[in-house]
Length: 143
Image (cartoon, rainbow, N blue to C red; front, side, top):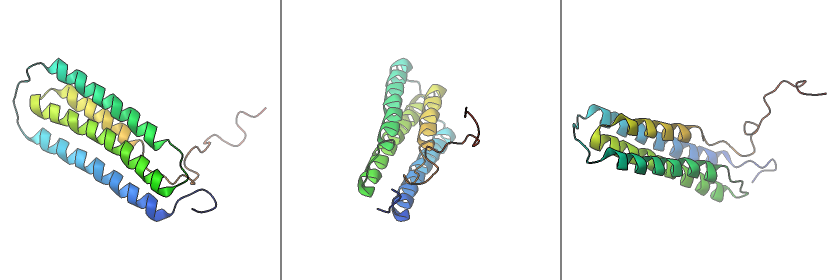
């Protein structure tokens, strides 16, 4: 680990590659699902919607919980990020499968919200100035 608390670029780039692959997989599956004409009726879409929303909320909570953890070890940082990304990616996929099964667009919206939560947690080097940077002008809010 370097003196400024940042990790080697290879570690961050590896996590970025995994991150982009997870997003690409979700988008490709969504595209295939939208192009496939399933025309199937679900037994009770409300039950599936409750399950889909619950899984999505757990996934969204998980991605923020795991990616906001501060760790001194690059290996632990990588593990935390991959676990968080996998949780929300799984939630996105479950909702896309529910959309494929019944064609109810509400599942697509829930999957989109989960995917946006995933995109919002783009991996940044912990020692970089982009995380937690004060974007206000230098003289603002000073007495």
